[in-house]
Amino acid sequence: MTRCLDCGSPRTADQCPACGLTSAAAEVMFRRRFMKRTGVFLAGSLAFPYISQIYPPLDLDLMLVVFGVIFFVALTLAVVLDRRARRRQELEMLKHVYGGFILLPWILAGMLFVNGRLDSQKNLTYHTAIVDGRYNMPGIVRGTRRLIVRSWRTGAKYERLAVDSDDYDRFKPGDQVNVAVEPGALGIPWYYGVYRR
Picture 1 (tube, rainbow, N blue to C red):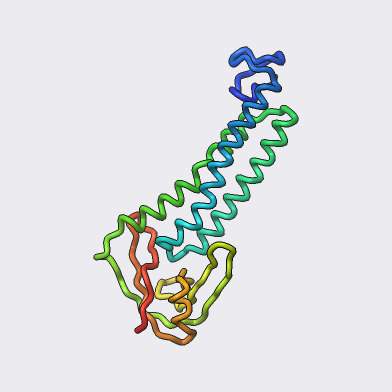
Picture 2: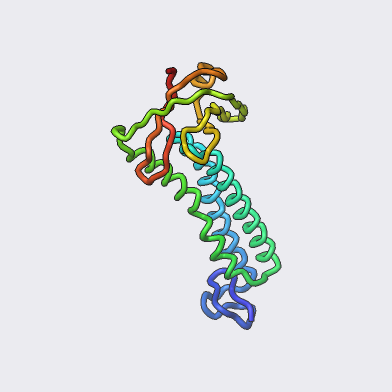
């Protein structure tokens, strides 16, 4: 027994008894909804890296790697869904799994924004550090610039601080700096600023 691509109810004939669509019409309806959902996912995937730079967490690089894995898993799932829809194969379980990925970039971006926006400036702490290196990766729209400093946290050897072009040009390896860090409203510590010591 197969299921309708649009409503998911079981059908034994070409026409679905629940929604009344033929298998070809159900495929068209599924594709239309699928493209809208994929658009929402891709818009969130573009927004997440930008929003993560507003209140950059200390573990931003790790978060971007995890987000990249989530992005490519969801994209692979979208390709599998599309191919199975063309063959009119069973999609119901994959549709639900893919539906779980749709809003994930927006949720993660919202968490990082709320974490920094609702944090109080009273909790600001300064850590002394020495700049060990710099990293610059130019991008089409916005490049990535990192100052690499010795870590003050236990278990971490270095901190890679996301900085703007002014801070990147201002500090050189060997400079002593004060790094301002906030604990975050949601418990995700984020980098507030770097100042010359």
